[in-house]
Image (tube, rainbow, N blue to C red; front, side, top):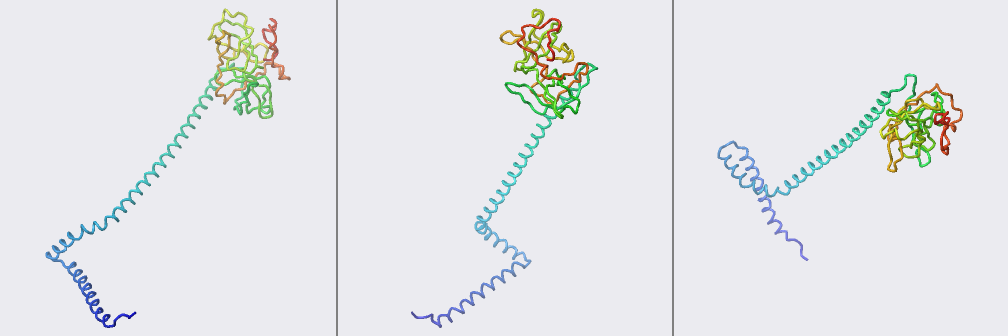
Amino acid sequence: MAGPNPKQVDTLAPIRYLATGIIVFSLVTLFVIWRVDNPRVEKLRAEVIDAILPKFEWVMAPATGLIRITQDFRSYQSLYDQNQELRRELQQMKSWKEAALQLEQENARLLDLNNLQLDPKLTHISSIVLADSGSPFRQSVLVNVGVQDGIQDGWATMDGLGLVGRISGVGSKTARVLLLTDTASIVPATIQPSGQQAIVSGDNTIAPTVEFLENADVVRPGDRVETSGSGGIFPPNLLIGRLALDPSGRLRVRLAADYERLEFLRVLRNFGTEPIDNPGNLIINKNLKSLPDDQSAVANGT
C-alpha cells in the first residue's frame, strides 16, 4: 500500500494556514467592531444579536429545561422538608396537649382531695396508687405509704369523691388497699335520710350489694349511703355512694369514688378505734343469715 504523497501534504498546508488566518482575523475584527462605540456599529451589533439569539436560545433549550427541572426539584425537596418539619411540630404539640390534659386531670383530682370535707378530728396521709391488682378473685390496689408513715391495718381510704376501701396489709413502704368491690369487703352503712342501717357487701362488681337492710320500704334509689361507724373500723359519715336498683330489682350502691381513675388516695388516721392485730378479722362471715341486734348489724372489722 502506497504511503501519503508529500506533494499533497505540502499543497494542503497553505490552505489550512489561510483558513486559520481568516478565522483569527474575523474574530479580531469582530472583537474590535464589538468594542467600537459608534451608532452604526451599535446597529450592526443589534442586528447580529437579533439574528443569532433565537437560534442560540433553541440550542440552549435543553440546558434551560434541565436547569428548571433542577430548580423545581429543589423547590419540591424544600417543600417536603418543610412539610416533614411541620408534621414533627404538630406531633410534638399533640404530645404536649396530651401531657397538659393529664396534668390538668391529676390537678383536678388533687383539688378534689383538698376539697374533701372530713371530720376535723380525722387527719390523713396522702398517697399515690402504684399498682392495680384487680382480678376476678381480688380487688385491691397498692399505695406508696406503709409502716414508716404510720399506716395501720383497717384505716379507711378515700379519693376526692368518696370511700374507696380500707388498708389490708402493710409493708415498710407500701400498703394494700382492699376495695369496696372485693368480695371480702363488708362495710356497715347508714342510708340517709331514713337512717336505715345496712351492710354494703362487695361482689366483684362495680356496684356492691346492700345486705341486712332493716326496712326496704323506707329507702329509695338515689338515697345517700354513708358509713355508720358501727364496729369501730370505719369512721362514721364517710360517703360511700347512692342507692340504685339493678335489673333484677336488687338494691346496690353506685359508688361515689371514681374507680376508673384511682391515682391519689387519702388514708384516714383513725386512732379512736382499737388497733387491729389480725387483718383477717376485718372480714365478716357472709354465711350469716342475720346479725345480732346488740352488734348493730356489724361484725368485728369490715
